[in-house]
Length: 322
Image 1 (tube, rainbow, N blue to C red):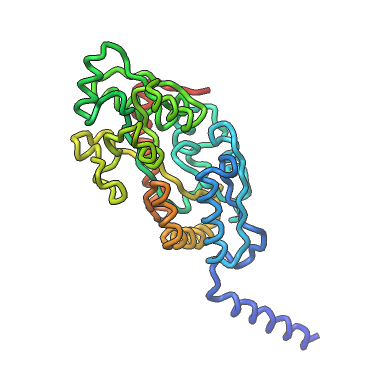
Image 2: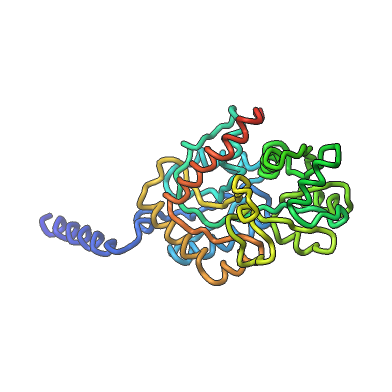
């Protein structure tokens, strides 16, 4: 009996020694990691998620899968993560819309800011102020002058009430002192088709599709502080004297509230290394996105900034979505 006890003690000691130096994530967790994407498969966010899953999996030596749970403006996917066990096996590829805007706009939402732990900020992207070339407007000043002389509200495309493009349009209207009317579309392609055909006056979508249709569209400004190195010929809103129009839409990793800090730190480190890799950087450039890799504190700061910025816009316009 004494020899059996001694062998058990030795085995236990060896187990402890072998675990020293391993990432916390590798200790005691054997299930695959799931990254929930609150959008349909095949889209831009889905492509980013699969690149991220591959990189994080290699860094942690674990199997990482992507699960698409689209619907209800990202609420279905985000809700599933908020309800998941905080055991370090489930994460949300969240963003401005599914997280901040939904929470700020919808009082009956089944989750809130306190439903998640921040894991890692990944990247963000600028909005554009774009007009059709048929409008014969070549600068923000000319656009403002045109809007004030037109005698009727200018039309701008959105992805629906409370979307980033809708809220940004309200901010643009207030800043320029020009009346604007939102027109909701099911997707960006439909909005761009109408804009190129002259059935709209403005759009705030991402730079790449706008630039790809430069024959029919003109980007007057980016919603950035400085000119983007990827789009050096497009002025920033701050450069033009409109700092209140500086904004972006971000993408990050979040976990169910209560996920162990050691696991969050391991996944954050793996995610940041993946996003900073050359291959991922090129995909970001190709999609007009900007790397903003950072740990939980960076994402916490972004969420707080959203509360202050978008919360103010939502309250001023008395927007509530049930």
